[in-house]
Structures are given as structure tokens and as C-alpha cells.
Image (cartoon, rainbow, N blue to C red; front, side, top):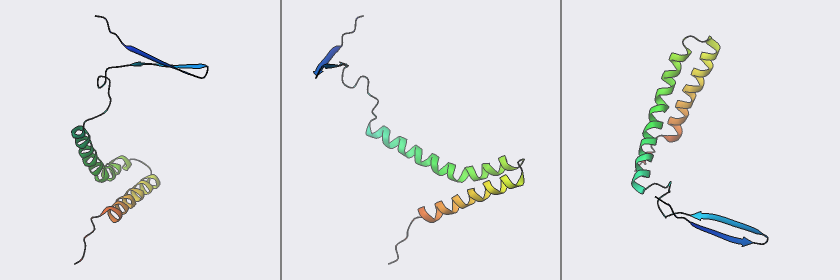
Length: 95
């Protein structure tokens, strides 16, 4: 089975630029709108899950570490949770 490609070249000054043209859509890395929406939905769910799961998981990791490291990690994790809640909580309009 032989494959045929179209080679295109252009002369730009004293240089030649060349490339091989492929069949449109065969070697694409683009996604359809439906695939993009599904990936966005999955990504949002995963981020929300990790936002609340990682601080809990951090406690299990820090159980055997020195207290100073545990205190630092725990404090920054709790601060991050509070910060996310304050900045990204749903705003309720008062009527």
C-alpha cells in the first residue's frame, strides 16, 4: 500500500520553505464541542473533589512528620480552604 502526499515549497528570499500537506481532518488533535464540554465538566468535578479531599489527605500524611511541618501544612491548607470559600462562594442578590 503506497501513500501519496503533496509536498509544498515556497521560496522566500534565498531560502526555501517546505512542508507536506496531509488530508484535512486525518491528523487533527482538535476536539469536538461535545468532547470539550465533557472534559470541562470532568475537570470541574475533579478540581472540586480535590479542593476538599487534599486537606483531609494532608492530615494523614502529616501524622508521622514533625509537628512544625504538620502545623505549617495544616495552617496553609485551612487558609486555602477559607480563601476559596470566601472568594468563590455563590453571591446571593438581596431584593
